[in-house]
Image 1 (cartoon, rainbow, N blue to C red):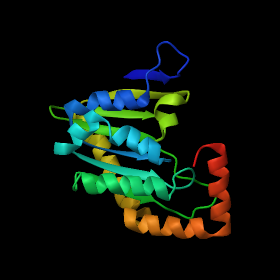
Image 2: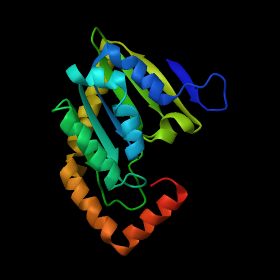
Image 3: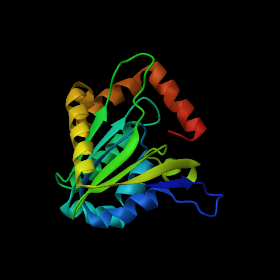
Image 4: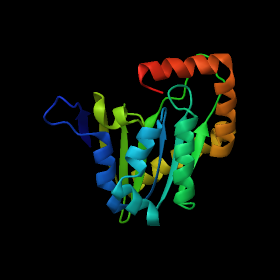
Length: 198
């Protein structure tokens, strides 16, 4: 296990994006869940050369939340990558109506071309700030074959449990667009933009 700190002012900083992209060449599949995503953050990670090489022959299942920051623009950017990567990238959007609770995970797991894999779990979201500019922390955990299977089983159980909340991108874009047209939706969007997080 490696504990990493991402801090642009710290000499030993380890940006999350760099770590994810560095392990991609040795992996054949993976998945991840992130609470928030921005168009800039999606491009920052998925347009990386190592991720492109990985996804050309591998598979990745990505789930993003919509409780804050994630907007229609981010979802449309994801849609573009999903179409470009021709079935190798599967994206679902977590939309729920729970009160007093939000969708807030930030992790990815990968299966190696050989044995075992990696689990990267921490505080950074799929935003450029979360993967490079913010002060964040995360751990890279080496998984043996048994541990990887345990992670995959738990992931699959949770995905099955959550299927009523997991929307294809086209449906999510429609739902989010309707939200944005409401007065409150427009107000929140304007506030996010003013804060530089929209």
